Image 1 (cartoon, one colour):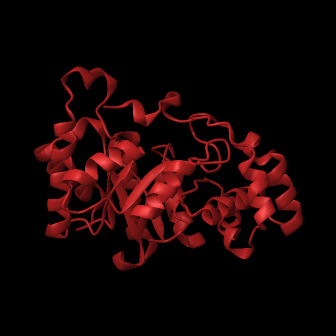
Image 2: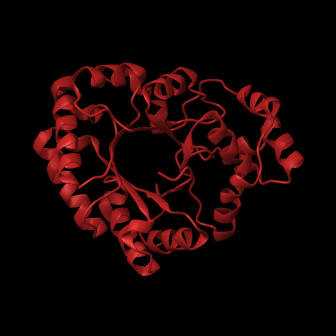
Length: 280
């Protein structure tokens, strides 16, 4: 899995295909999407952009996610088939459970047993080759420990909100110990909170940007990767797409990483501030 991929949350139905095509031209080889993004239209746009690119299927790492409304064994199998059809591919490189539980409106009928059934279907998809790797999103340490007790195959990736205002040290350390790759979203702020300007203005980010002649966005991404994360930044601007890939052009000093760490206030900026650990 590439360390740096391209996120597709809230690209917009009319623009998504062109934006993803530009990302592929810029050199991104991981495209991250989800069943729920624009009601499936983003998956269609990603597939169309891949076909437009002229790249072979094996050259691009595709990941998508199972939405909260599709938990359960049969629902998971059906949702994956639908995602593959929308993407126009025979397999995805990574298939993830988007949330550990249902939408709030369905919480009354929810049982953790459904989560186990969902994962059993994920394991079947892996065995059948329809997905090459399976993972989760927004899982806390508690959710991961629960899953480890019953699964045959452990999740390979946990995609979570992770940035200087939310440095999830315990979760990062646990995933590293257990061999689960942690993939960060909202590294540059998020489409929900629109806090990118605040992130770029952080004193530690500004100082590192000046020291390395780098864009603040590249500093934020480099910080996350040096913490041990994979990243999936999003931009609709081809110039910024390339700037973001500049994260590989320099390394931060230990004290620079620490200065950015110091901004942590455990602030959740996505999903209305919901803490996934509150989900049963």
